Amino acid sequence: MADPSPTSVRHAVAIVCMTAAVAAIVFGPASPGAAEPKPTKATLKAELRTLNKQVDKLISEYGAKRAELAEARKAERAAKKRLQEAEAAYEKAKREVGDIAQLRYQVPDPSVMGFMFGQDMNSAAMLEQMAAAQAAHLATFARARDARKKAAEQAAALADKIERQAADVERRREEAEKLIKQVERKLDKLVPTAAGRRSDGTWAPQLPTGSDNITPRTRLMRDEIKERFDLSFPVGCYRPGTSGEHPLGRACDFMLSSGGTMPSREQLALGDRIAEWAIANADKLGVKYVIYKQRIYNMSFPGWRAMADRGSITQNHWDHVHISMH
Image 1 (cartoon, rainbow, N blue to C red):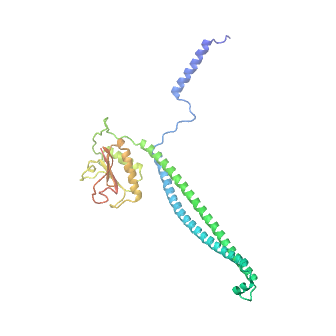
Image 2 (image 1 turned 30 degrees about the vertical axis):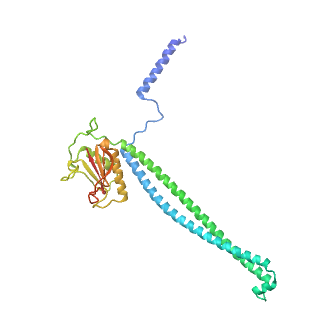
Image 3 (image 1 turned 120 degrees about the vertical axis):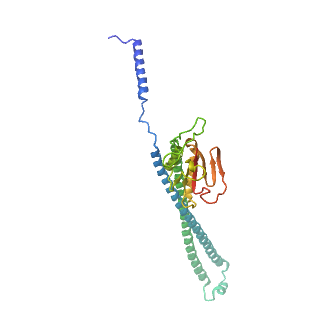
């Protein structure tokens, strides 16, 4: 059989390459594994709840560690003070022993010893007895000093250990909060764009619909916030017989307490997050303005502005976040 010509070989190679290219276009490039599916809103919400619980636990743990550290530092200071007292007592006893030893050399005359300790006493024996007693006394002080030094070192080491533990808890909390921010950004990307936005950026008017008597944009905003945040109090939207956006079905109040009372610190922080979220997603949802903590944020004039005192906690919007829609 004759060998294939160079021309036929080139044709065969070209056909193989073309076949491979077509297969790549039709079936896609080969990969080690299938592409990961994009996370759903439900998956991200579950992840966010888990991370928030983790952060709450770490905050509690950090607070406990700080309290433990305060007690450890207090014990460390007390131990150091006792050590200083023991060192002072030891130095005093040491000086007394030294004085007696010096006395043995400075006053060798037995008549002087007799005058000091009585004629019946052997002066040398007396000095030896005193020196021995003082040496034993000094040894007692030395043991107390050493014990207190060890206790002070242990107290300082314990305090340092607790401080490192507290720093580690704080580091883990910061890492968890970074993950929360990442999940929140992913969730924000899933926020749908409300209907009725014109090409020039303005919003077409909407009429209230449904049993809740609010506009579709208002309903979307309300439902997104209810899905995104864990709300402990009611949400009020349509309200007849009042001024503003409520009777038009274009506003909702997200309550943070009941009975007109000042919300807790945690609920006030939740209000901050709701307000920030509404502002961040205003272009998608058609938010007109946000009122919270006696301030207003108008999307046409970005930035928080103080409002006049209207009297009560509710009237000043401290116990709820008010969101009005186009």
